[in-house]
Structures are given as C-alpha cells and as structure tokens.
Image (tube, rainbow, N blue to C red; front, side):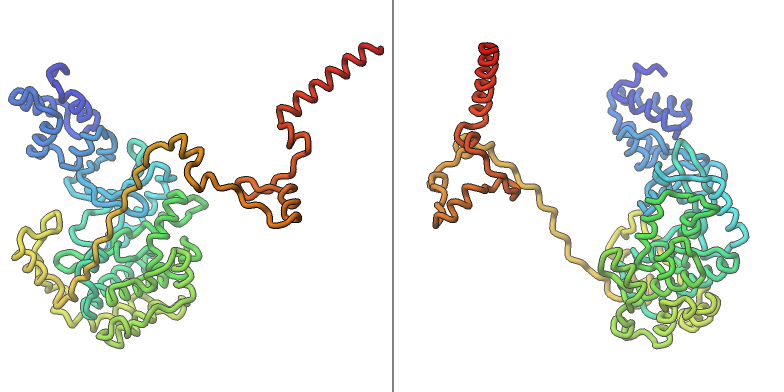
Length: 476
C-alpha cells in the first residue's frame, strides 16, 4: 500500500506497524478495505474499526493513539490490558501466542537491576512445589529493554477490594479462607519456599470461593543470592513498605530474612484484617508501623469483633506473637486448628457457583446486583461507606501586576514616619547597628561612607591618589 493513500491515518498506520501487534500483510489489507469505504477517516475512527473487528483491544488502541508503540510484545506474550500498578511495576493481562493461554505479566521499571540466571533459578524452584492455592511466577525475561515476570491469569477479586465492599467477615468464612492459605503455605514450606509478602492484596478470592496466593516468589526475588540482588534497591524498598501492614517483626529488621514463622505472622495479620475490617496497626507513618510490629500490641479482637469465637481469637493471637518461637511449630498445625471453623460451611469442595460479573465488576441491573450480593458470602456485614473526599482546591488566581504606586507605597501607612527612640541610649544603639532582611545584623559604616556614599568615597580616594602622584613628580 502506498503511504499517500492513507491520508490522515498515515501516522497511525505507521505506529501500528512499529508495534508488531498485527502482521503487516493483514494490516495493509484491513486498512485498505476500511479506507476504501471511508477515505477521509481520522485515526480514532480507524482505531474503533479495528476494535470492533477484534484486532485491537481498547487498551492497545488508546496507547497507540497517544503515540506509544513500544512494549506491547514481550517474548511470546502480547499485552492486552492493564490490571493495575503494584509496588514493583505494572501488571497486565497478556496472551501467549505459543500455548494460546492467558497470563498476568508484571513489567518492572527500566531502572531495575536484572539477573536472568538468578530469576530462572527461582522459577525452577517452584517446579517441585505444586498446589492449587499457590500461583507462582512461571516465566521471567527481558525484551526490548523491559524486564517482566509472568504468572497464570486467575479470575477473581483480591481480598482487600472485597473487604472494602463487604466489610468484616464472619468467623466461619475467615476460617475457610485462612485454612486454604495455610494449606498452600504448608506445601511451599516443605520445599523451603517462603512468601515473605503475604497481605490481602496478594490473596485472590475466586467466584467459587477458591482462594489463591499471588506474588509467591516475589519475596525470593527481593532477597540477595550470592551477593547479587535481582531487583534494585528502590523496588525492594517499595515492596517492603507496601507490605508493612502485615510484615513480621523479623522481616522488618531484615527484608531478606524469609522464614516459615514470618509467613505465620503475616497470616495472623490477614486474619485480623478479615475479622475486624482493619489492619492491626492502621494508623501512623511507616516508621511508626515498624515500631508497632516490634513492640506494640494491636487492639483486642474481642473489642473489635465481639462475635468471634474465643478459639479463633487464640489462633490469631498466637500467630501474631512478637517472638517467632512462640508461634506454631508448623503451618500444618495451623491447618488442623482451623479445620473445625471451615467445616461449618457446606464443604470446601461443594461450594455454590457464583455468577460471574462483567469486566467492570458492576452488574448490569439492580436485580443482578441483588442476586450477586446474595450469592456472595452468607450474611455479610453491611458495606462500609466513606464520605467523598473534598475536591482539591484550585491554586489561587494571580492578580494584576503591581503598579508603581503600590511598589512605592501609598496612603497613610506609607507616609507615617518611623518611630523615634525613647531615649538617647536607644538612639546611640540604633546608630551602631541596623537590621537588614533575614535578621542579620550589619556592621555600622564609617563616617565617610555614611555621609558621602560609596561613590563619593571612591571619587575622594582617586582624587587623593592623583594629588599624591603629582606632588611626587613635582618634588622628585
């Protein structure tokens, strides 16, 4: 196709070619057919046509219209949509052209350090650890100067988002979710694999109430191996800070200290969050939260969730002990302790199937919304509502430029004389020191400089030099 035939869409078609999203032959054919029917079409119209044909996604179209052509294809993975940003990078849904499967791809910042040898060794460590609850990363790579991690794509809703909508959960549901998490942790701990960053945003709840642990392996990537760090210090700091609400005291002191008991403490914080609707230490700065995990006890569960059984409160309190040796001997012991609470449900493998919501997570009608809410957890607490935040005030509009009169000072205030010293001693003090802007005291000037000014002093000095020079010539 000749570029002159593209009209206003020429730059958009060229960006499409550079993106490698569509085979060039197929692209030229589709664009040619569209422009034959719409010869004066603009790039947005062509983009809408490609979306309707299933060739582009709205995410891809929007980025291309912004002139962004790089980063769509990472190895065998084609980025289809953006899921959100985390502590280490942005997560996308991606399609694998090799196996025709869907994955979640986390793209790391370009500044991140990268060692593919270490990363692939971490990937291989999960090959011997397989559990339905654990979603480990399955691939790592570098493409086009961008580093990425890959996980299988899981449908569902993260626990923190679910809690924001539904409020705190009843004890039996908490026991059911916590037991599934503990089962996955137990298998991984048996293979010397530890999470290190367990928190509500890393726990996915599917429509059938199955629970999945996300970001399993990120903690390993943050740890140093043979003196090498897989990611840079900034990414490590962001990840550790984002997990402070559920971090164990020992991991706060040393982020590379990944242990089974550290995961136990984080699980206790997650259970505390599910039962009360808030983190153990919800307020304060990052430094204050770090100190609280070290030395402070959270508010009692019996006060925040009085309906919680004493046995479940005892489990949470033991998980959140400051000293690691005072927690459970293994996660397997926790599974047995939680089993009675999970059995109160109809059964982990006989859960009612829930209706899938649209992609925007909003039912299409009020009836569908009521049906979806009823199919969720039994007897959920009323959703918490927060007052909308006040709009950010606009910066004040600058007024007109100052006039000459305003700079010189007008009116009575400008005409008022400076107050006189009350006595002779004050007058003498004022004559020896005077204030200058900034509160710095300036040394008093000499008589000649004070009465004649700087220019007068210079002229007098030059005159004296000339007279002295003439007198020297005259008498020599």
